[in-house]
Length: 363
Ligand code: SAH
Ligand code: SF4
Image 1 (cartoon, rainbow, N blue to C red):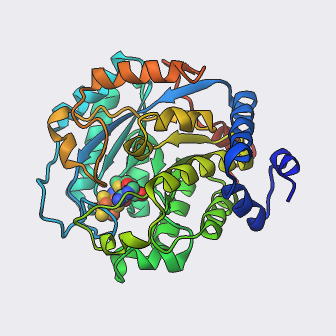
Image 2 (cartoon, rainbow, N blue to C red):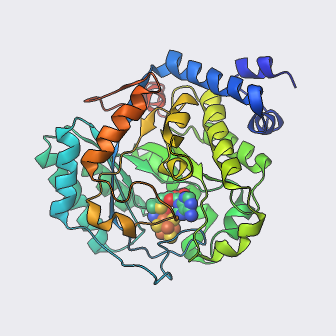
């Protein structure tokens, strides 16, 4: 295949995508440079900050890969108070992050729905409606998604984890709480409700191939996703998937393929927002900067009040669990400057893809 030609295209077959994901050495560098150029021309040399608040690690689900799954009893469950969540939002507001993400385990109850609605209202009240709020609280009913939207959440992150239904089945229990079809249904509901919809996949899962990842790119394109957060799978010793660790790509390989996924997605979808996942930094100290140089335009500084950061271990060796939100901001400022990008302080940084979608009639 001719690389120079492929780098000029924005539509690729699954074979071509898998080829791009396999690039090494100078060819790989060319791919990253092209993705950075497309980002620069299409949406500018700006990186947006989203303050991430991991407000509770209590979860009703049992995903085989996740350290905070329901059946793991080897750590402390927590649920931040409304006051400390609102304080974290005020920190983001004061520091001109313009946007926050509220993430938690997945719960379904009237109490949880009410709580998140009230929280959204309180946050908007305290920050004069200046913050864009993203939710990442899993699969919910159409009514719940609508309620949260009405209470002021306008973006939602729900990773499809893998668009290959067979692989999805292998990494989740076989019961009604964990159906691939429900995942897709939720993504559709979010779109219909009017959210800017974000999804993503884990990279380097047991049983996963480059063809699967190529199919993930096509899934995101065909769904018309607005935002993506994807990163390497990192094994956790207290999870069922840990028994498959021998067959995994080594961690550096997972990291490199994750960067290539970002770059190839940028070629395919020039206008979407792509986050440099924190899991990248768990592997390489410069992980997030490298992601920005491969086409990412969003970084999510962790602003979860410090005392519980150690308990939100979706994967092990999570970086920066000892830092304060202030440390995190200062460190990231230096890091972004190294990529020749500026930080979009005070700007919402809505997905340009979403804006285009709405202008064209919400397709
Ligand atoms: N409960 C919500 C949000 C929190 S989990 C949900 O599941 O949507 C957020 C993301 O963490 C998941 O979508 C998954 O992709 C990622 N994750 C979980 N375990 C992981 C692991 N071991 N390695 C890398 N990412 C992981
Ligand atoms: Fe719960 Fe999300 Fe972890 Fe699954 S990935 S166990 S839903 S927190």
